[in-house]
Image (cartoon, rainbow, N blue to C red; front, side):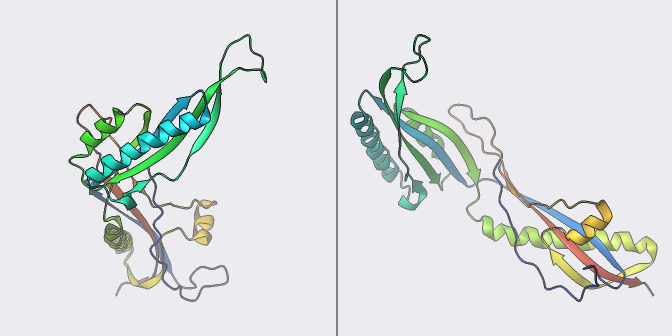
Length: 243
């Protein structure tokens, strides 16, 4: 599950009473909205691992295979900016036998690991690339995530829908009470602590999120789950009796 914190803006607040709440009649509502889009990019994460009795040999093996992977990605038109391979880890490996006490284990070689993260911007051919990478000895996959190339363009759309949902809830609540909305007192993507504390006794901050789920892959077909962009908005409306 991948989370994205989305805090688009907070409008200036009107004059508060001493406790931070409006000094006029008001209604506090939480609007919610959700938009689902098919994944149009894929991020693949894997480790390239080499082992050898000597550390330089293990590193040589990893770097040689890394160069082959870079060449493969270039042939597949994967941009350099979509490939992250900046880290390198090396650690000794010991023989695990009961007759070796802690601190006296036998050194049997070294393990060198180079993590890769690759963003593929064309979903259709990525399963073939995944199979080709898995076929390389020493490649250990850790995950495949779907995503949206234009997630920033979607966020304002969801924000507006959440605002519309908040207003709809407020109007439906006030109509049987013969009350109406006057103006917006405050808008925030997170809850207003002073109101939450008074009503519920505790404050639970809402974290809008971009949720990504992935269906279990079946060789040679991969099925990406749709991307769900969720948004919550907290609105305080000033109200008055309807005429």
